Length: 336
Image (tube, rainbow, N blue to C red; front, side, top):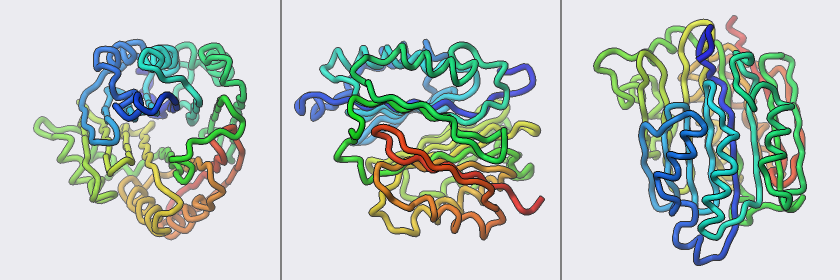
C-alpha cells in the first residue's frame, strides 16, 4: 500500500495461446495445477481468496483483483503494488508444458493514483514496455504501445499489444468486445456500503449495493475485505464480469469489466452501464472498448450514461495488432 492510500487502478494482462485440438479439448490451460497457479501469483504478490468455475472457464477472486483461466486464454488483473508483468514467463512456461504456444499478448491500465509507490517494472509505462518486450518470445513480432490521452491527466489509457500475425484474431472470439470501466470520486454515501462491519459478508455487499442486479443471470463469487473494499467475479456461460472497489475518501475507486458480443441485444450493454453508474455514481469515469470487429458499440455508451448525469469529455480511437480497435472515452458528472 502507498503511504497515502491504496492503489485502486488495476494492471490488466490478457494472454492467448494455441495448440493441438486434443490438448484444448481436454481443458488446455485449465489443466495447469493449482500449485503452479499459486506460484505465479506469489511472484505477482497476491493470493486466491475465492474461486468458482463452470464448463467454460475457471474464475479466481484474488487478494488484489481477479484471474480467469480459459482453455486457451488467461486474463489477470491486479491492483495495489502488485508486480503483474512477472506472471508472463511463468504462464508461458506452464502453457508450453502442456503443448500450447502463446499467440497474443495484451496489456492495459489507467493512470496510477500513487505512481511513485509502484515497484519495478511498473514505475512508468516506458519501463513496462521494455519489460514486456523482453518477456515475450520473438515470434510475437507485431507489437504496438500507445498512451491514449483524454482531457484529464488523471485518466489516460495505456495499451500494449503483441501478436504473431498483424491481423491475427481468434475465429471464435472476433464477435466479442471487452469493456473496461475505471471510476473515481465515488458518491460518498454509496461508497460507505463497501466498508465492512464485523458480520458483513461479500454476499451482503453484493445485495445491498445493487451489484447483484447488474447481471441477474450471473453466478457471483464475491469477497468483502477488512476494513473495507470489495471484489467480485461474475460467471455467465462462457462470459465473465468483474468488479473491484476501493471506497476510501480521497482516493475512492471502482472498476467494472465485462465481455459482450456484437450480436447481443443492442440494449444489453446500455442496461449494464446504467446499473454500474447507479451503483457508484462516480465523479469521473473512463470507458475503454476493445473489439476486433468494426462495431459501433462504443457509441451506445454515451446514450447509456449521459441521461444519468454523466457528460462525455473526450474520445480517442486507435488500432492495435490482433486486439483490433480500442475506443477510450472519459466522462464527468454534471451534478458537481
